[in-house]
Image 1 (cartoon, rainbow, N blue to C red):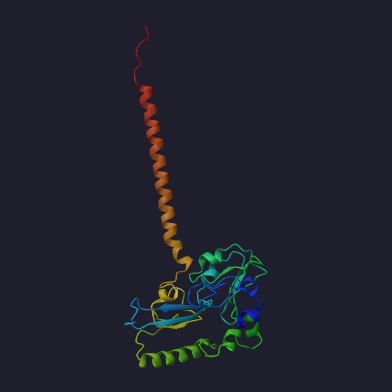
Image 2: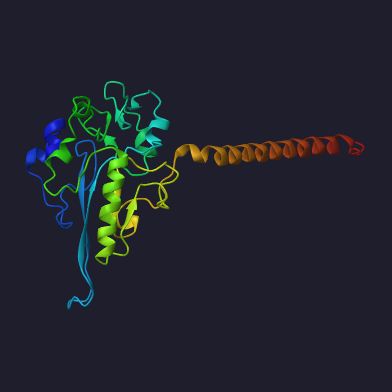
Length: 257
């Protein structure tokens, strides 16, 4: 609610949203009108006696403001910029709605706003940061599960919380989006990182987020190889055609009586 109120984003269906039937997750996904989404992941045993441990996993999903942002790489108009706060922001007045950033984002956080017809996502409340304020979501969060600060300070807090959880028996807990996590090296880590207790895929996160530019070299090689093969095939076809013509021209004709 804090995100929608501050950024003046409309409610779904005028506030008369229908239930999704997917646990308590009625936002369903991030899009042009929903810049933050709390995921509810239910893990319950198929055994009605609950012989295995059952749990809910929750993750407040948002733009990751990647250190190496794929959306920033592919934007043809310069609408996507990296700010002085190292966040990634889409300038709606420059965006032409081409959707290149939507296809490039490995986290699926960008969508077209149905009113402006431009790509939109979380800005980490860029206007609030410029005024010395923290993002609205962090300001409103009653449990401090959303925290804001410098990457250095957040890393200290996150590692302390990780040690606390692991000390309580959550041996599978880890940080996703930090240096050395084994997942996000290609995007240089995330400026919005997470403390998780299951595999990234369980939360709908990619195990190995990719940058589009990493595919340019192999794509160029394959394209070059394809062009060479097409050229070779054309040359052989042309050569065969010429040889057939030569064979016809040298064939002795039967005398006409």
